[in-house]
Length: 571
Image (cartoon, rainbow, N blue to C red; front, side, top):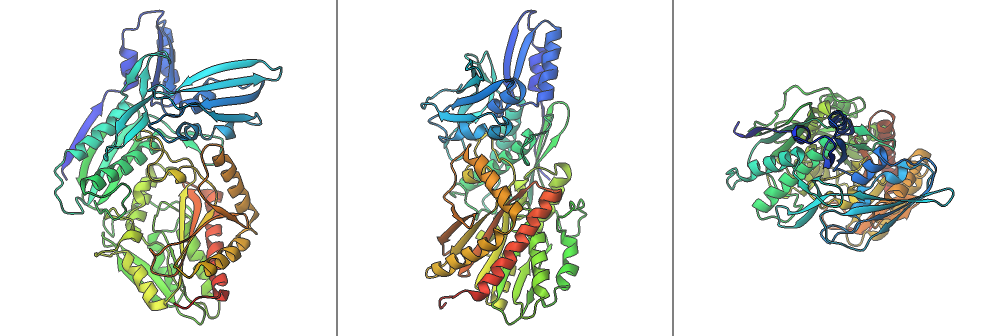
């Protein structure tokens, strides 16, 4: 198990407190620290006669409203957000999310500033009271320009020491931990053969605690943000290293595992390669409502039909079932990305309903990526409400849908399901983050996934072969009509769409019976019709999880029934 890095970094907050500030001094700084730690440090400095204001370098406008701006008596809020040539036009608007949901009934209006190239962008806030009085505030948002693995210029939040108008960048411990981990990987001689490792472990302990927000599943989590930034930045490093374009999902570097623990004290960073977690190894218990791999053999056998199987890289079995009948066959799959937690249980619930019918004809593979599912359980044991995108891909490090060359491992089950059933519709259950997804040290917005950064309710993606457009449209119309009967699902979708629209442009989705849809010709799939669900489910639990599972199952049944009556073109 080669150890690439093992270091403890001085805590930026401790270093700030250790400075010999003279009595009467004023200190203003932006740090990647939670609110409690910053307030405690301010009190410590105040006891020494030093007036300090220590602000959050992460989402500074949101924190200004959470910690400093008093809305008592405020009748209107107008915010002019910065626009920077090195960032997406909506970057600073999205960074303010979910402010529009946190100001109560006070009207809030955002406008864009003229583009300006500066390392200290500033939000301009105007508060108007009921009598027409005006209070103008300036909220700095310190940033730095730098390049990613591909040489693309990024503008990222950073630490700062100064008065909000002048001053200079302060490289914080949070930023240094990320940089040191990335450098350790970049400097290692990996060779040329993929996969480069079994598991690449990046373990970092940080003292910043999560803060839940009174808005759905939203939270401020520096630990979660660091996991996301490390995981996707390491993927980008290996994409560039192997000559692939950004976002390439065919890359097979091995399993990348950032584990971010919330711990008191200085930041500790360890990077090493490890053996892959194997079949038979003990795992933490699956959370309530999450389909556990060890329960699958009995659950699938209860459906009847014929067993289907494949083997993942770790040796874990990939299990499915073929139930033959007189209906048109439908392939049902889920768990491609196991951190999307509603699909597996929803697929199995739908399969149970179908298996009880006469003539039902389907295949079911509820947990297509068991290695990712095992990692999800391991990560969720430490941080159950984090997105854990490291569990998104397989132990090879690729997205199994994009696996076009051997060894096929998990994908072999899909191929077997298509061969035995002859299905021409694949219902593929997915999810996406139920709260904001950020990469604060790499430009803030998640590169390549910008349109997925905010929850926008439940929606459908329907891909079809050439000549199948009419069938696809009919399928979408019928399925969405059935889904529209679920009042809670529709309310969730409307609310999330409305909030996200205030903070970012909406993707090009059509609304069909109240359900956002993306319907397009696409030849990438092996069957003519592929219906993909997208439920905002990463991090949800309890009643929210149960509602998501019901929505997934309802979609499968609606699609199965609609497909039986479709007029289909000749294949």
